[in-house]
Amino acid sequence: MAIKAKVRQTEHLKGKATQNNQIVAQSMKFDSSGLTIGDLVNVNTTGEADGAVLIYDASAGEYKSQVEIDNENTIIVGGTY
Image (cartoon, rainbow, N blue to C red; front, side, top):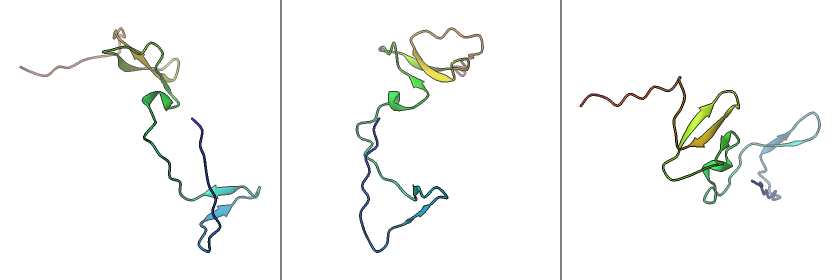
């Protein structure tokens, strides 16, 4: 995902410079209409399919899209009927 930015000259420019003279934004706006869950850093949607769920894989440090839940640490409580 690329980030595009505009810096406009204004009398009320808000921000600050670090010791390295880098500009640090105080606020940022972006258009999220084109984002998907796969754009998140720790989400792997490889193998995405109808009915898949996201399962966290601690060894990989990411969420993975899977159609089968095969993990001894997962407990599904469906409630009382």
